[in-house]
Length: 144
Image 1 (spheres, one colour):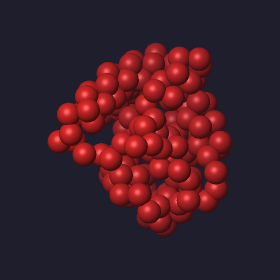
Image 2: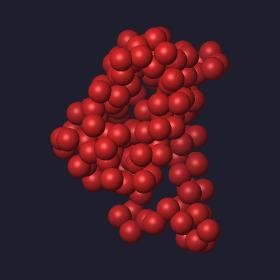
Image 3: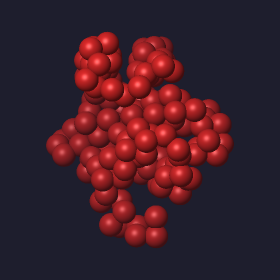
């Protein structure tokens, strides 16, 4: 759990990050995030239940409503959910992840929240990417 806490802190974008991938410093920041994501996927592969508990605790510690939460805080939490499926086996990991009751509940809770009203473009893009990745759930539960 300690390594997950450190990863969580390191995965947060700096508050002055502008999401300008043409900028050399920000491109380096993205490369760093790629390495962190690969480490996270390995942890998910070996300890998925521990990671699920960690994701749940990260999301529950966010201020409400989610639409007003700091972009850096909500973005890192969404990223943990988004990449969870990449670490699950057998492939495709998204389907495997959705068979896990606690993970399904996390995704359902995000869809039922007001996250789609967040004002930050990158938060919205990540939420929409998450919705597409786990779209099987939306097919099963169209009311979301």
